[in-house]
Image (cartoon, rainbow, N blue to C red):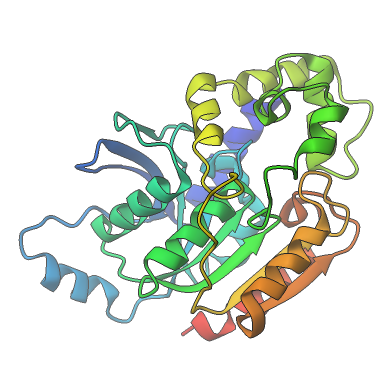
Length: 312
């Protein structure tokens, strides 16, 4: 068994230890989401739905939805946040479509479609509102959820997500990887480029990591490769000619690695300026693109502060 498989086993043990269980939620739009949910949480049938939702929400901890980035899956992405927040929040941790075990027969691939589908999924689970945290690609989806469903998203937290990116944002990365398209960077096919990619994600990746670990990483990154390329191609955020991004009504907490090599910290300041007084920005020193992993203690303290009004 490989190192990544062992890590995944540990993540599953940790999730179960914190009272979470895996569920598959099938939607009428063709999506099937795999999601870790609080124990005994199940889908709400259409029959007597309002009464069941009322009973479920009564005297319950507030909901927190965690959306992973492009190179991850829900099961393994949030170990250090699960242990910190399971006591005070109902945690919902899905695999986004074509990551982990979530799939769809629907032809739509945009972050807007993912956002719409996730809200439907959460309502199937009896959740009428939640704070939403999104990392990187998950931040794109979370931003769309906040815009399209302001009564559902009570508070938004964005971690290292290039929401203000433009069609030229990736030019430096493309040059470094001698790539024609960003999918060649995010979905590498060689061990050398997998190693290079992981050094973008983590600021202090040990240079002694053996090749067999990166072989495992390549297998994970390239599952559903063609569909993941379509997800990147279908992004509305950052695409030339896309409508101007909307302002948001919710309070937004923006967390960013000071040394992010995928989305330069300048994009964090642009997002803060764009959202105005509703947004607060915190820069995490010494971290790159995954500050919630690289400096979990600091990030969890910032998250706790941002979520304090969500607590009972």
